[in-house]
Length: 510
Image 1 (cartoon, rainbow, N blue to C red):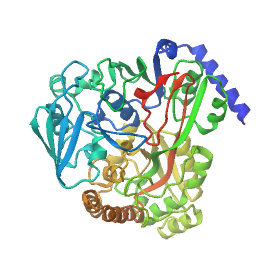
Image 2 (tube, one colour):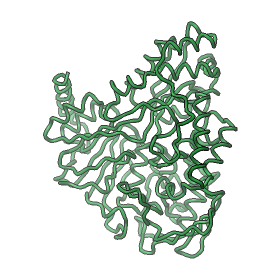
Image 3 (tube, one colour):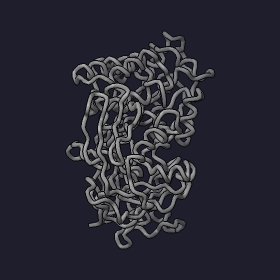
Image 4 (cartoon, rainbow, N blue to C red):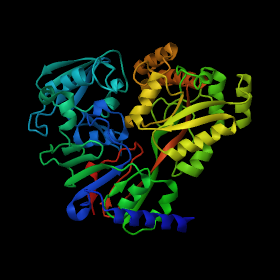
């Protein structure tokens, strides 16, 4: 098998050489240009207006946040903030650095923080990730380099969020160009500057020579970084082989061994915080969706999935079965009340019969990535009589199908924006807004209370109750943690992290 896969990889490489159709062939150490490839295009380059992992990666390269969480130690360190102090459980005073400039030369100040949180990311804006700042009531400008965040209620995860999905935008520039202009020519304060956005193809970046010296990230090392979109997984492998790209991820597990044997390529694998799950849409419409309104059917779907089989045969690399709506290391990920739906096709068939579907039913399953995973899930469902047709689309199409009620089931993934807190999973999907397609008022109230509880033990218990309800109602079928396989130019110093965030600003050439 390994020999066959090696032959296949050589075939991909030969195909890429014959095609010679890419314009980003100046990759590598010699040209001080890191070219990294992924399968998804960022819908909008602005971090508050996309929620794909590719967008999260770009956000951490181009924009800074007020606080930085050290991935090695978990310690919170000043980034755009110079220091902070809790004045009360709902008031956080933040002093800002005075030596930071945006990529266009505009000085960074308190005005940028206020504008970002209230006009770009706040309520009634175009943000697609409102949960990032929903916990903030308003931002007060104390002086040019001091702000006070007023919280709606106590929020123990505040520093975690301020170190994650809350990049600071340039107020003056954004007001001039608006969102449409910003998405074409964005600027931030980060270690890399965007010089070109090519819709459908990628993003070109250069090292920011004026990046502030006290940044806890350190100074960027590589001169140019290019993000390119290559949707076909075989083409990504081939172009890595031929040196047209330097870094790829989501490498198929069965390609890891042959790639590892090649002297010009390094491979790393590891479990991440990302969870694969089925969203079971109780509010979808049409005959394909009707069965999912019955709890027994949703439970049957949970019992029908062979999580361990998917982990062992497809994901590999440290992946583990998952049964709850959070990653086990996230703060307050308490699974004590969660039902562990073990693989039990007989139980699934029994529940379907009790619900009136002894002969199964026809339905649709939507997916946007890892087609082989989606097909494996469909295979498990067919074994118990659920005949699901696959709709393989881009993420925005799938998200719209879910929210509109068109999609009865969707194979989704969520990496929690690399936030190490259970609220980063539960709030977006069950908090009553954003991606919440269930709108369970009882559950939303439970989560609102848990989000605001300061006492660690009590907060853990409250999340345990909420996670138990999600499981008991079988709103989703959590399946497995992702392990990501990275393959890259052997000349590249690259460190992978469990939060699934490749920190290219900290990479270098050997």
